[in-house]
Image (cartoon, rainbow, N blue to C red; front, side, top):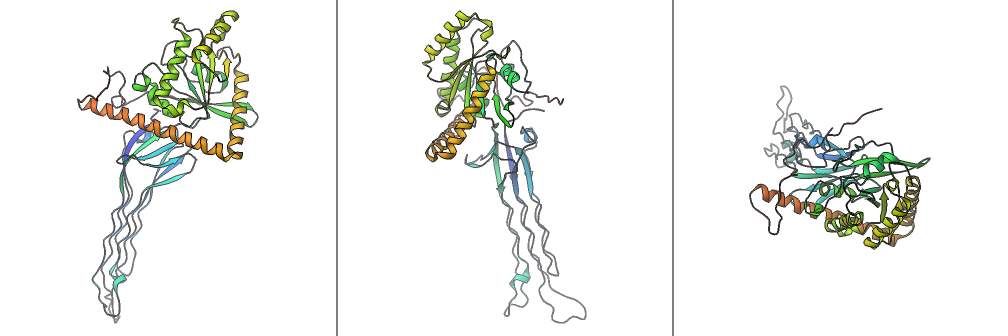
Length: 406
């Protein structure tokens, strides 16, 4: 199954059926009159959140969806059949946007939540509706109204409590494998993770949270370099960010410099997302001596001017991960309790969430506009040269995910 998190579709609601003009003409029955029935309403188009879906791949190649038209009215006062509604299932966490106005029509964040995106056309009236004491043989009818038609953009943002940030090979996938039952691909080369991975971490009985791992960021990611910029939007709905740093990189690069790079790219993509609560997690501590480890931690904290929590772990050796998971659970519970009890804090969180959504959408829209200009042969003002390594529209197949059931 391929992971697709953004598609454009066209939806058209059904047209209303026309009204019927008919007169009663039956043998041996006197005083016939108008008996034309009304048409049927056109079917509407709804988008519904389905918890059994996790990708928009169903809309990658089939992009036109038409609801059923209403049938025209019949004689003997028969009303035409109503057109069936069209229900399009999408994963939970899908945002529906009007492509022409960029207006957010709705956000489907709960299973079973349904959103009307195209209203079916109203039925036409038969000539029976126009009879009166002065118009006993009306020949007026009305046609059915056309159904709404819209170009829509569907954006999927995975729903997770905790998001992982870091350079490629920082150990994000290893961390998810260590603390959850998820089994993302792990290898000793960069960009092993090509799509977001989700893992459910069980801390205690009936207590758990969801962790999201996105492809690693590189310098220039906010301008479209690498893979991470496509998936940064998936961190918009997280409650906490974990910044993973490789303390002992194989290429002997400076870990402090790597940490600074991630912070800078995050701020360029969305200043509001950079304000989200973030913890520093220094990984691969088992590959260093204790004295060297302490010096490395102090250096990274100083270079970042870090004031938040710091955790030193080894995801591969399961060192420090249990304490980190318990602290995350405590943080999430305390945060939820504070939101419920403190209206001012709840309003601040809601405002920050909205800023993150708006900035992320604006940033991705700007990158899409740049791609469109490049394809048309026009270079945007101030745009950097692009080697075309990653072009979303050119990669029709996309990365493939294989799900294995135990």
